[in-house]
Amino acid sequence: MGGGVQVTELIVFLILFLAITVMGFMAGRWKAGDHMESLDEWGLGGRKFGSWVTWFLIGGDLYTAYTFVAVPALVFGAGAIGFFALPYTIVVYPLVFLALVRMWSVSRAKGYVTPADFVRGRYDSPTLALIVAITGIVATMPYIALQLVGLESVLRTMGLNGGGFGGHVPLFVAFLVLAAFTYQSGLRAPALIAFVKDALIYIVIIVAVIYLPSKLGGWSAIFGAADAKFTATPSKSDGILLNGSNQLQYATLALGSALALFLYPHSLTGVLASKSRNVIKRNMVALPAYSFVLGLLALLGYMAIAAGTKPVINAATGKPDTNTIIPALFSQQFPSWFAGVAYAAIGIGALVPAAIMSIAAANLWTRNIYKEYVNKGATPKQEAKQAKIASLLVKAGAVLFVVGIDPQFSIDLQLIGGVIILQTLPAVGIALYTRFFHRWALIAGLLSGLAYGLWLLYGIPNPGNGKLHFGGSALALSKVDVFGWHPFGASTVSFYVGFAALLVNLLVAVAVSLVLRAMKVTEGHDATVAADYHADDGPGTGSASTFEPGSTVSST
Image (cartoon, rainbow, N blue to C red; front, side):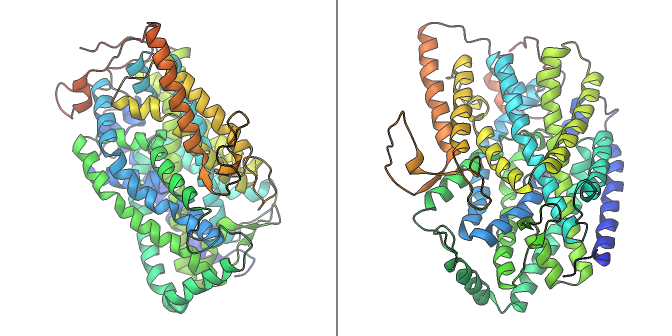
């Protein structure tokens, strides 16, 4: 693979990128309502996406460029632990099946646009809703930045690998285009583009898993090469099989990631855009098909080992960029035109989720901060305008995020983001079934879980890049400290710290709820009723104008 610009790959990439740009601008007319001047139309696509559109939208939202780049790169670097993404995407759908149906129903009945809207109505607490909204925005920002990291890995592999500010110019251009068509077309743009993105991904992966093994000597040779590499590394956690030191980490990371996945605001945005409960049910059954593709993607990490692929050197840092492993593999093993198609698949795979994430963050800002605290009387048109501007600022912040820090650090921050968003489980997920927790107890638990989780994360080093703090999300049991007591002794077994933080969150929430209820502290008015959690599309089920942040909603 040469060090200059790969002209053929770049031309194919640009042709496909131009095609989805045109689609993005045209999407505003697709399934359009009378206007785009409301959050329901701009931020939720009119809440009328059917089964196929929803399937591609949610799939395009959850299976991101980071998934296509970082998961096989993790398998390339560490082996079996990288496959944690496979069981969690299998477990997540039956786990959240009923919860998402209930969230869709209550949101349709009451006109909720964000998870914080639901919290506001359920607990009559603008403060709790504000904390949930801020938590969602903070957890989403590094996730958006990671889409840029995935896109830059492709640009870097194609030879657009300059140092300094100039090296990021292609990225700026790509996201100016993204910002423009998202501003105009809202959620309809990523929904329409997701069809192209998924078609390209399926084609590329199916061809790769058929062609590459035959070229590399078969699966036996591929796994043999991977086993030889990990046997020679000093880390006991690396290998094509799990071992005693990382099995607990694998299990807790998979389950924790599954619980966190649909708490992310952008995940719920795709769900709330669906037109009926049955659409959600059908999608929860069909979405595991993506997990099959994810498993094939992960295997590309082992193929890169067998092929002797080396990561591209980042001209800005002078260090190998492990995120380029899979693009480099395609450049090395396939004809230039097909490598260009693969690059486009990854690049478009960055634009779709980045657009949805920025829209979700903008909805949170608009409904739960701007309208609640800045302009209580905002009209639907003012809300839409505010959300459009906020989405631009979110994307600009993500670009600055990537430019200003080491990309590897942004990957670590995404793991931190998962720990952060997991702390909203009691206020958002559990609240769909029970109102046992007191609203002030939920605030206390959420803040306690965040504080403890961040404290644990601060103490995690990353020997690979020399960082002493925030080096990942796995912690050895020996590091668990309960007021000076180490309950697990010197155990080297690692676990996902999000679980420990969530446990503290729940314990505090339960204890404070019991105390406040004994003290008869007012619990606020629940704006929802039992029938809201079973509402379906049709007359009498509510509309988007039913709920207004900052006002009391009638439960009748």
